[in-house]
Length: 298
Image 1 (tube, rainbow, N blue to C red):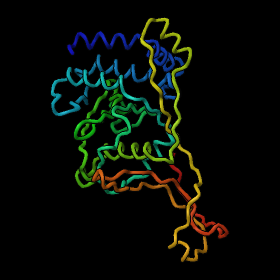
Image 2 (cartoon, one colour):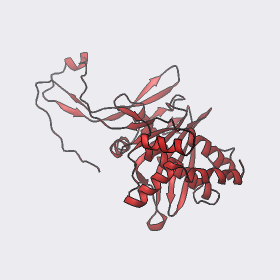
Image 3 (cartoon, one colour):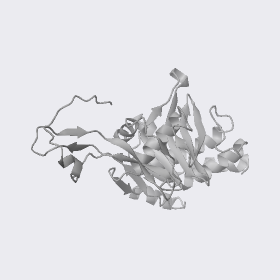
Image 4 (spheres, rainbow, N blue to C red):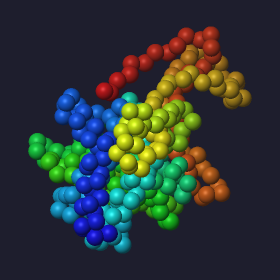
């Protein structure tokens, strides 16, 4: 895709009703937090347009794949993937809970890790990843995509006043953390995917507002049928079956087992699935609860 065609696509995205709505919200309220389906799609269109306009010179811009050495090719791939990706909105509580489960257990990365071939992760608030003052880097979204041998992730946000796009690739079948020591980016993505794949994390879906859909129709534009998935945190107290070995021990207290990640081995894949296990009570129902002091991180 040529630079001229990329620029034309960026202009169309900037004038899209959802982009305009999102930009007006930020200016009017001085609040760029993401709450609604309209916000999710509006931010995605705005971020994509900004990266097209500034991507050829943007600091922090790196090829997303080894065979994409030139920036125009990288941008074209990014645009096509971003606009077709399934959108997800992560609440701040859920994102922080996923981060708190570090370090992750040692495991082999599964080729069935991604529930969708292309996913756009948007967060309620931006994630600071370093820098100070005008050079602070804020990540607002992840683009996670499947490939034949592994998966790619693009971190999207701002580095100071310029758009930021940083690409990463990880192979299936590799062992974490042995093959990727001290890889903070991979740990972040794996933690989120473990939450996404966990049966303990409820997911709700929603579509664009009626007003947004009507405005898109009036403009003669293609309808956006994306279903936005909201990832929220709920702390149920599941009923657990008492195992034989538990029955043989006469526990004198009940206690709370903290939420944690479990690496479940799948022989057919030769890999593990990371699953987040929700907090639960352990011990006899009639025993007193053993209380602990917990640090609550905001």
